[in-house]
Amino acid sequence: DKIEKKKKKLRRSTVVPHASLQDDLAESTSATSMVGQDDGPSTIIINKASSSISKLEDEAQSVGVSAAPLFHPQKIISISRETGGYKIQPPSPETSKLLEVYPQRLLFPLEPKNKETTGSGCPVTLTNNTDNYVGIWIKPINEKFKETKIMEPHSTFVVYATMKMHAQPPKDTVEFEVLMIIVESKGDHGKLESSISGKLKMDSGFMVNVKNLKAEVYHAMLTAITCEPASCQIISRSIENMTLVTSIDAHPTKPWIVTGHEGGNFSIWDYQKQETVMKLQVNKVPDKTTLMFHALSQRIKVRPPKHSLFSVKFIAERKWLVVGDGDGYIYVYDYTNTELHMVKKFEAHDKKSVNSLAAHPTEPYLLSSSTIGTNIKVWDRSNKWKIFRNFNTKPEIAYYNGVRSVKLNPRDTNTFACVTRYDGVKVGNIKRPSSLETTLTGSFVMADYLFTRGDEHLMVTLRFDSHNSEIWDLKTQKVVHTLSVSGHKTTWVACHPKLPILVTMLDDGTVCLWDASTYRLEKMVHITDSKCCDLVFVPHTNGPLRLAIAFETMIAIMEVNLPIANTSNASGLITGTN
Image (tube, rainbow, N blue to C red; front, top):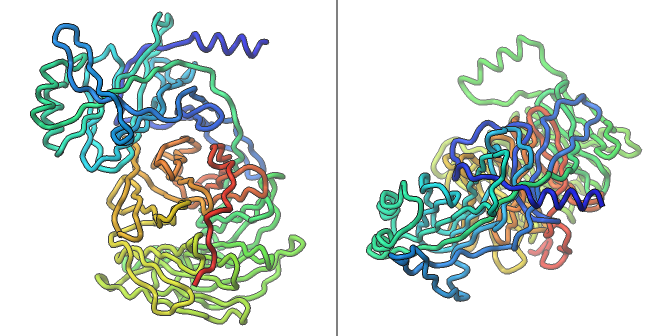
């Protein structure tokens, strides 16, 4: 009864609109409000971790939204000169899918950290599925049109709505007005911006300009209330007493997370018991003189520290852990009975750091690559770790062409993709020695296969010179969609191998969870202000789907509490095709 009374009290709470489409967001703090849906998408707010190395469970706050799963704005065909009312065109199945707004109901924290406004605001996801540019405005209904943005064709853009807090709430429900105007060029958007800026609402004169430019106006209304945030837990581990994390992996059946470190050591952590299970100093840390000489040599040629570990990977069926270091060596350890024994040590990349490892799920192959080498090597562990295949990226436009990462295709685990430093994304097949070819051209930081249940073959990428992530069709080799968040740069992308879940990391330490089948933002989680170093999905076998993230200052494990994470995903997967 107390809970129900509290809920009724919260439903009566409301706020006064203050600002919209905030670009220069304030620096993220320990309480950042975000938006989602009941029993699915939700807002996560987590206090900055400052724990010891042993244990920590942070209580995060969640704000849910009771809203329709998806909302399509309505097309305005005219505005009455007398009343200012809008004449709406009846929607059709074709036009209703062109533009999308999500969610329709915004929830703000009842007591934000900033007492004047609701912090950074609630994110509103806008999707443009047209071949044209779309100008967007979002504002409270009692304020004038000010800031505007323009969306690229086939893109999703997340903007922020903020509210000003008042002691006495207004009698009516607070509403936000969203305008999405399809234009033929960026220049046309500029002309419309000048004719609506500073006005409280659209008028018939504005519609004349719209028709002259052959534009189309779509309109949506969003409601907003305040509510008490729910709570959830994120397990975290401080690494203040360790060196920088360079790589992370999750055991497929045990609640173990392994981290490789710049200091030449690795550690296996049980996140359920919150204790270290095993750890080992693989390479001795050089003396200060050697480290200083290495730092000076970086000005001449970039070379990773030889003693550092750069990649870690579980091979669970053999109870092995594989580690790659900065001097080109791969180490194989047996962890039976939680005791570490070296099985094999061999030189994989001649004095070049082993930065990426990928283990075949059904065959005895391990792929390795180096950021300062041009080769991707396939090792056969069933044949004394002899080399099975050697692929050369063959740089076409640059002398120096290191391989940033290598990923196996979840739908066909004999094929793989690698991101080269200057020559784009290349795709090859383990069983075919001459199969490596450039598939996507560009200067990419990272790439990953995007899970789909249909015939599509998609990949998500991150460029050096872009704030956005891009979705590519591997068959047509064209971008089919872009994802971006207003005021932020995307710094990391990763995909779940068996579910349509896409993760992007923002430059302020915020985790974004997207539905990869709709390109809709479902959840945002701000954990820490430090930089993301690596991340990995934790398999379902140990409870709910989780995501393990290695930051510069901590390891965080969060639940991926989305509806699509609870569905069966066995169908549609293909493994080991020739």
